[in-house]
Image (cartoon, rainbow, N blue to C red; front, side):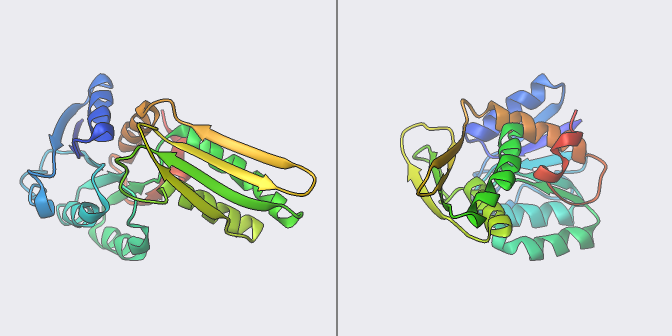
Length: 227
């Protein structure tokens, strides 16, 4: 199928590479060609099956709205816009299209979310929590969307919202650590990405899953169904 990748950054470029390796025809739009979602017209998207967005928090909302207007499904890997989720959910529902989003498309990270759910019980037993995340110096949002999801999980299950410490340095792909500390012991849980390929593969597989579907989906709810 034809996939349109929005974003020519490191992750977007790798998504395009993985999509081609999986047999898809790939088109790419960078920010210069798509300012204000100008490149996402109905005609331009006519034969596109799914759009994959790895842009910026400033661009993503316009991109989602344009895809909904053109009735095209979109996978969103961009973070930093989740306060607008209710509005976007309504736009997608009214358009009859499909949107699938994630703070992180790595299957390993989504397994880590499950581990965090189990570990959150410690917060009811005298432990204090902290979340640390480290990313490359070019990452624009802080804290990361992944760290925000971990904090939400711990708050919902453990009743506490641990502080997030964010570091931006060097070429770190993505390190997330949960520290649960008590007077008796310390529990440390970590996910350390070796490369962006896990994110890219997850995003492409998500697009394959979303093709032909309508609705509003989060990757952590569907990753077990991927092929």
